[in-house]
Image 1 (spheres, rainbow, N blue to C red):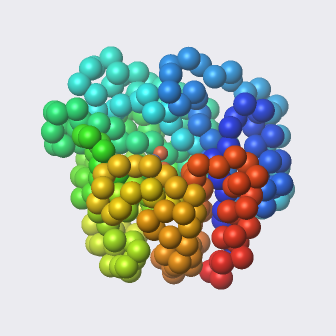
Image 2: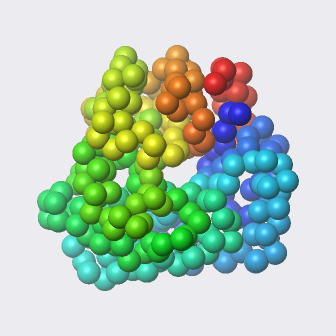
Length: 280
Ligand code: FE
Ligand code: FE
Ligand code: ZN
């Protein structure tokens, strides 16, 4: 089955997201766990709302959603308070996600802000060692990044360095979210050499760790380190490469999440287009 969905706003509640994605023709979705750009607490959903969503997902055979951490977290900040806040908040969100067992949780590894990759990697894995626990029911995903500024996660090697430093008992709960815009902007040629890129991912990280795909076109050329998402088929990746991505044997059973610049009807159009193009 093609697992496809898009990013949705939590403003109408959790159950509403489940209903809306069904109406858009999808079967999974992504949402921000909190206000993405500030520390202000978004209102906590009621337990009834969350369990209604869980029941809907289970009864329809849908895929548990992907939660996305706010951008305000920087696990490898220079500022100890920011590192502590990021880790404690992430832990709190992972505790909450036990109400939706089988969820995935995606975060940006962070910016090392001049401290260097090695120091950044240490801080990130230290945070994961504190925020995760053995026996949790959520898979935590490191997102592949475009390499804007001092972003960590711009190469598969950097992701591998983080995973290697996480306690072995927690590594089963770790994966990677492959963002097609970011990977393109980071300099991997997914348009002309998708097989080669996925082989490289497998060699460095292990393809089993690739648990979700953010499906985006890019406004900028490969290697630009920019991170500006484009609608499907309207960027430098293009529709035919995106069709190869969703149908690639190493990827086709993973869930795909659109983060393209669209409103909900626009997402519905892209879901229909991709569903038509999917043969698994
Ligand atoms: Fe992201
Ligand atoms: Fe993304
Ligand atoms: Zn992005």
